[in-house]
Length: 207
Ligand SMILES: C[S@@+](CC[C@H](N)C(=O)[O-])C[C@H]1O[C@@H](n2cnc3c(N)ncnc32)[C@H](O)[C@@H]1O
Image (cartoon, rainbow, N blue to C red; front, side):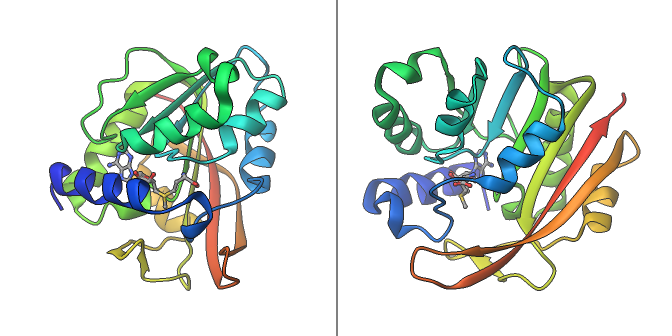
């Protein structure tokens, strides 16, 4: 799928569906918060949420006192929804409308978080571009948290095909600069009660 087609798809999702009409909605992203806390990140750690969409992760991180937050997403409408929800609190957040596979990171992050964006990259060249951005964006010793559908999770998300992973498959894709620190499967319940199996893995980066 081209970058333009991807953007058109996601812009249409976020302009036609409400927050709780999308399968990935979470009131509180507990596992993401737990994995971010496990990195040892503090208030001044730079954290980027890749494909953050209109997720409430940023709200919870602000509540927990994290101050250097960036949310990146292809969809301007998704970012606008989060900004509107957060009001003045959102002014400290850096909002980036970009495709992660072509985004040029301009600073180093302590933590890279991605829930359900990487798994849409079904082309090898896009996965390669993603890993390159990840390596450019993380500081030496920084950590990446990547949540995807698990091996026995759904084959599609938002009508698009996805790649499914376990921690070992993800470790292979990320390559030798990433060391697996922790991994867990999580059952996500969609707003209409369907069950979806995710895996979350946490890696440390050493260039
Ligand atoms: C399934 S949603 C998950 C949103 C959010 N992470 C959450 O957990 O609520 C996938 C998100 O990834 C974004 N996305 C998909 N491909 C992307 C890409 N190549 N670059 C940046 N964002 C992307 C979409 O716009 C969408 O917001």
